[in-house]
Length: 283
Image (cartoon, rainbow, N blue to C red; front, top):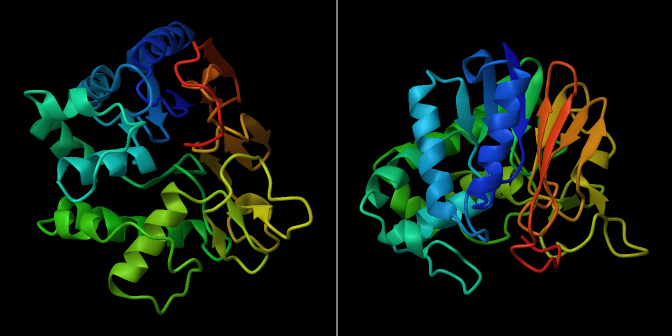
C-alpha cells in the first residue's frame, strides 16, 4: 500500500477531487492507497463545505486509510462554530455553519489528530519546535487531542488564541501549555535561534533582512533532524523536498498547485489551481 500526503486544501474541493483521481490512477485503485492530509481542509477557498463533507465521508469509509490533521483554519472553524471566536471578513465558513449537518461535521473535525507518525515520517500541519523529539511531539499532540475530544473543548477553544508563551518549557501547565503546543503544531513558521517562535512575519519564506529569524526546520540542534518531517501551512515557502523534510503547501487557493507526495518514492502529483484569492503570503 502506497502512502500519499496532500497539502493544504483550504476549501478547494474541485482540485482535491482531481488530485484524488490522480492518486487513484497512480495506485491503480483508491483502496490500494493510504491518503493523509496535513490540515487546513477548509477556509479561503470557494467550496469549504464540499471539501469538509468529502473528507469526512472518505475518512469514515476507509477504515483509517484516509485521515486529516488539524490545521489552524480547522481549529478556527471549531472556535467560530462554538461561538467563542468571531469569523473574519476573509473566512469562507458561512456555508458550513448554515449546513444541516454542521454539528456532525464539527464533531468529526474536533476528533482529528494534530500529529501522526507514519512509516518513519512525522506529519504536522505547521512545524515542530527544535526542543521536541518525534516521540515528544506525538505525546504533546495527544494532550491537546484529548481536550478537544472531551467535554471541555469549548472552554479550551475560548482560551486558545494568543502568541504567548512563545517558547516551549517542559514545566508549562494548563492553558499556557496547551496553547504553546497548538501554536507550534498549527501556526509556527519562523523561530529565533533559542527556539522562541515568531508569529509576526507571515508573508515571506524567511525572516527580515538582518534578523536572526530562521525557518523552524533550520534552527541548529533541532531534535527531529533525524526523522523526516512532513508539513504544510507555509504557502510563501512553497514546495520543499529535502532528505529529511517535505513541505507541501504549494499555494492552491492562491493560484498555485495542490500537491501530493508519495512517501514511498517521493513521486509528486500536482494539479493546477485558479487564483481564488489574491496572493499576499498570508494564511
